[in-house]
Length: 338
Image (cartoon, rainbow, N blue to C red; front, side, top):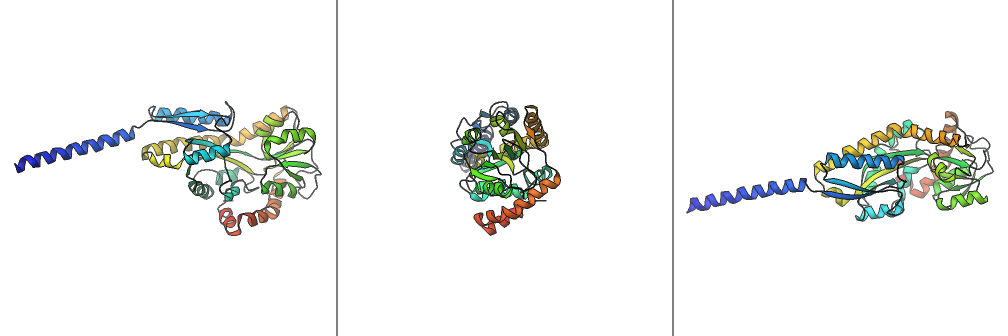
């Protein structure tokens, strides 16, 4: 009888082990269909990269992980989507930094924190001290940053060519729209313009009616797409660096197997590498397109860009340091690699 019960117990252990192994296998083979949002129209650079990522992810996962792409802010303004990913209502997004819940994230768009593409490659790619800092801040909002998508340097679009745009000490006598962020208001004033905070949606009418003479806060791509028929001049003054993040709901991320996390990370970083390799030439192409349309592009020398950089760090950074808190500001800025 004892041998019988021992045999029965042994069989039970075997079945339990098989069940556990089978359960793990089933878990690894779990299928997903996720929503991913971005802010640009179809067939733009970001849309093409997201489509590439989705196709590769479906292929490499043997069809288990599929992405439904919602372009052109179909799921809402990116600030709203940020919140929806945080609570799990949207699975993933690739979009600009949102500072509503954490004002310290304004550091990422701080004027002249970097002023050239070498600075971008040292700081705005995955694994750098600055990006690790950003990932830690996002994690507090239940968001996982998987990779970075470098976009462009910002510049100034104007209705007429300003006097000495590379010399911040010269008064330009021009009113410019700035985003409703203190850093841009301070920057415009520091460069000799008169800052007028306005929502982006109000900018076209403000330019058209003469309320403002120009605009801060975007780059060649955005200005061309929205204002090419009314602006006369563009100064690529590298006011700030625009970067977007591929984010996923943290609870969803933590529920995935290590194998799926590794696969998603590998493909996301490959997408990042592809973008890093082409972002600079993409920006140059956008500026050339403006020139071909009849918009004068006023290129600045390295010396002029450095003068604008020094000016911003002298006049804008101390004020932002007060706003964000001296200790926190210093801790973040020291992560930037020259």
